[in-house]
Length: 328
Image (cartoon, rainbow, N blue to C red; front, side, top):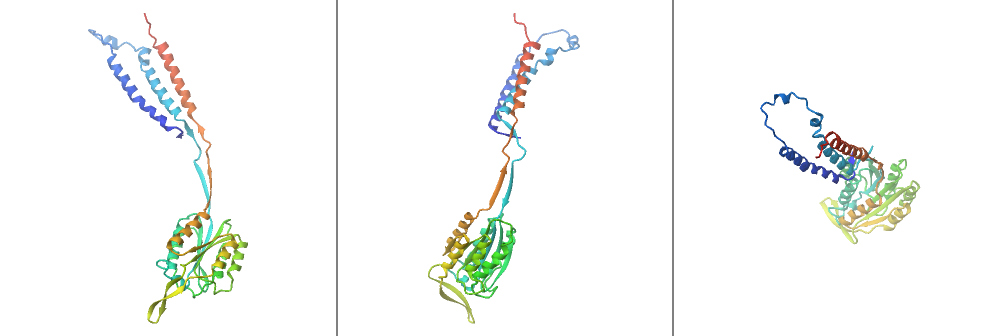
């Protein structure tokens, strides 16, 4: 049971001074008489008036209590809310080629991408999310799952050198599509993050985009890297050396991939803009939540109101008939 207007329950506080006043009045209204022997009076049966003397006050207290409860409008409801969620299938295609070690993002492109993508996944508990990595070839690091703790651990284990170097964007996309094509989920999304141009693999990126479109899969393409040149570590026989490289890549192909599938293209030039990109995708791809709320509530103040009226009538009957005094 709930109350529509619980503030009216504060009226019950009025009973404190009312009861206190009644007790005080009783103590000051007691008549006394001196008798030589009261034993004979003690043996006399008490009349109905003696038993009923306090009933009117009790009925008035009950009337105030019941009226306060009625004004607060008690209501009954079978259930509050029934909620069911329909998550989105999201495959993340992450470039792990050597250029992703460029340090224009901190500490480098790959680590920044892993951190932001992990935060994105953890913020969407209703979604099935998986991870595909690609460089010169591609493989599935984590299939679609709602266990995002496992996904986060697998993200952390991703490093450069896990697969042959190169940039096989088409293979990465095709691998994602293969993981999602048989899913019954209506909303399917690929988040493609790369900093290079396709130079490996047997599948053309635009062909993979057409396949994704066939299965109703949207692709959000993220080109990562600052404009100009970026410093990249290179392993040599003399240890790690750094070289400068141009961070430009084939943005037109990424845009075509996104637009072909009904997605969008983003450019992330630093950590802040990369975070903003994922927040934008998060807003575009909200999980669909169906909420059924049982708002039909039964009003339950009628019994309290009727009981209060009954108490009032009984009070009037007792005071005017059973406890009536004759005025001279």
